[in-house]
Image (cartoon, rainbow, N blue to C red; front, side, top):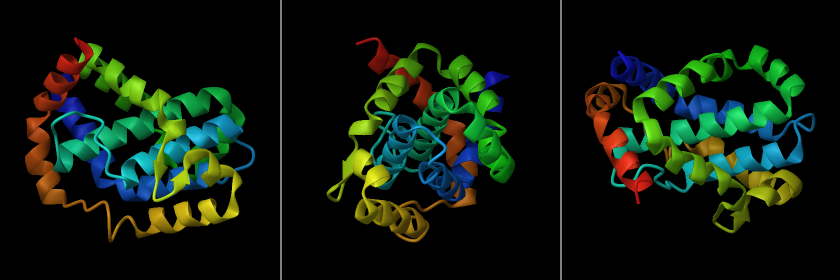
Length: 187
């Protein structure tokens, strides 16, 4: 059951990745959210934009699953620090925040100890840097903030290409994600 549900939830997350990145950007821009959380989420966006691979040895759809999980884990941490602000975002971006708990619960069940690898990646998100723009600058500096906005809105065309047929085909290879992350966690 957990594999089927994992594949279903992650298919939805990957197909919605570009739209969800725009919703995350709105949270990054929200001064009601604490700065540490905004920086963490800016780092998550930079992680995706720079095409960093959260899951070793995968590309394509499975790489995007890693990106979706990194965003989900970062959102979970940020929500813990700014719950009131997140309630407003839950109303404006239900497709991003409503499935969050189930996505992470199912991922933790399916991936097991391998989630440690993703958690470690999330801890380093505030240090993300891409094209001369660091996550903290994207929160505090107008030029970097504008760059992040432009990069996220251009991601659909340039960086993050999602083909629904490809997602449906490749997501069936999801055990590679678990195997890769568990092997890395065992080191």
